[in-house]
Amino acid sequence: MAKVMMVASEAAPFAKTGGLADVLGALPAALVRQGMSASVVIPKYKGLHPAGVEKVMTDLPVYINNFRHRVDVWRLRRDGVAFYFVDAPWFFDRDGIYSSYGTDFMDNHLRFAVFSLAALAIARELEQPDILHAHDWQAAMALIYAKCWFWNDPRLEHLKHVFTIHNLGYQGRFGQQALWELGLDGLQFHPEFLEFYGDVNLMKGAIVAADQITTVSPTYAREIQTAEHGFGLDGLLRSRSNKLTGILNGVDYADWNPATDKLLPANYTPEDLEGKAACKRALLEAMGFGAEAHARPLIGVVSRFAEQKGFDLLEPIGDVLMQEDVTVVALGSGEPHQEWIFHDLSTRYHDKFRVWHGFNNGLAHLIEAGSDMFLMPSRYEPCGLNQIYSLKYGTPPVVRATGGLDDTIEESTGFKFGEYSPAALLGALRHVLQCFRDRDAWLERMRLGMAKDFSWDRSAAEYVALYDRLLGR
Ligand code: ADP
Ligand code: GLC
Image (cartoon, rainbow, N blue to C red):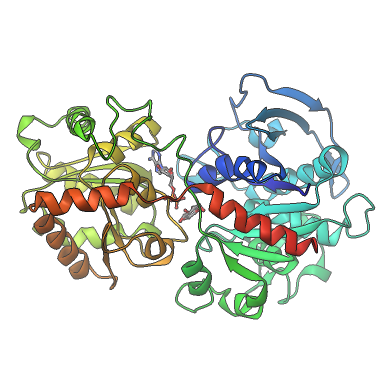
């Protein structure tokens, strides 16, 4: 039985800012269902002490520049998966996962270096996996250190290395002094490895160090090899294209299913949609709307407010859109300008547009269920999960045809527009509102979407095949 150890900065339900956590919360259990053995390593963030967790190692040997960092390790078994929590209070007992009050922690490179080294120590001392699978730049150093420091360690040298890019827009790029702070030296600082326009680029290092690179949809795997979506790494990715595959994310229907969702005031199925109307009423009430909003079509948004997500398209067309017979509810937080776009519209059109700033899982579920349609106009989208949740919740998504959005949404289940422009978005939304009036056709669209199956098992089988190829099985 092949053994994989995943390393990442988030895993639901323990720590989450976005879809990365959903993947790490569900994929490992799906691998176990396929007959593999799977473990996950994440940091032990402030207040993270789930019931049943036990300390399994004290004072791991984690050295950088001859300084020994204080690290303990905790473990919890869940759905057949061993979750390890790296307890380094100096680095992780803080308010915020990556940042505080909108500013990234200045020592993020060091925080995640200590975390990555601890993951390698867990691999060596406790798990002895066959495959080390690192996700995004925060775990990139696990592969970099494995290649630079542990290539001849008898307990690690056989390991195969997989790196998954969830978002090429965040590369873990730091000034050259980071090289020394991470205990690395000039030998690694060249354009074929860690050097990137004079800086240290950790994602680049992991792409070079990995035996296999994956990303989270087939279309995004192609897009990142182009100058438009490659964020400067497209050339490197083209040169590695024989090692790069796109495996679409799945959905954990134990968490995201309107028939069983415990976070909803009422449940529903494609056969009996009454509960969905109750969810819409509850959502409108929760957002403070009066009864007059019930008859209007309701557009939902749940998103990190980042440039990636495309809401700057809303800014120039907001006034025109608000002339339509429509209500908008949005949940999210993030970059100041993106937050302002929502804040501005909600202040000027308070009777039709409301935003809830922050992170709120219960409200995210209620928006999926209570909205009539779901908006994701992303500039780029590696996979995207909310549009797939929307299908299941009978809330046809309106998406830009990019990355995983293009791979998961069809004209029969949702709406796609191609050009990244405010006019294209406005055109798409007007078309959607027009279609919404044809109740029978709309119900048919909802039911087709609800019947789609994006469960993890299919994607997990693709990972198993990839691991088997790497292990020569
Ligand atoms: P990304 O990972 O780029 O943020 P995804 O669509 O893959 O986008 O996943 C986002 C995940 O994070 C979904 O589970 C979504 O419900 C959740 N999410 C995003 N913003 C919020 C928020 N403000 N409150 C609660 N959940 C959120
Ligand atoms: C990233 C991407 C998102 C993807 C998620 C999980 O955050 O932005 O598109 O669904 O990772 O892979």
